[in-house]
Length: 146
Image 1 (cartoon, one colour):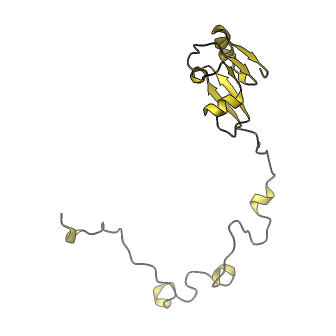
Image 2 (tube, helix red, strand yellow; image 1 turned 180 degrees about the horizontal axis):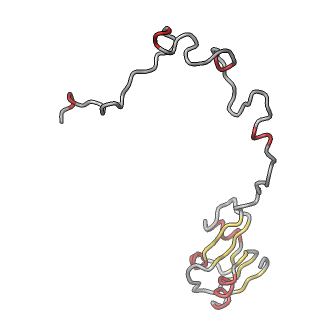
């Protein structure tokens, strides 16, 4: 194979359709646009979803549901992440300062992943049933939100 012998595959390239070049071409006169109407004219543009003045589909359908502004602001925290914290009393501020949760988090929930090897006290943090059992088994406690 040499660069000067490279060609596109047979039939993959074809000549561009030349419209408005006389009646013999098959696309003369109206150039495939039909007769009259907005779409036949130069600059005959309408925005996406425009249905000629008829009420558009996206406006005919009912609005449904809503988007919660607080969804996703309760962050999940692994039980094993509590081992790495230097303090024994843990609240949301401690988790933020340690970088375990983002600064935008409005709450945190500890769930059972990994092992807890020290006794910790949780203040104002949600816990799952499994995490609660593991924390209490390690000698810890939970206060505030439960």
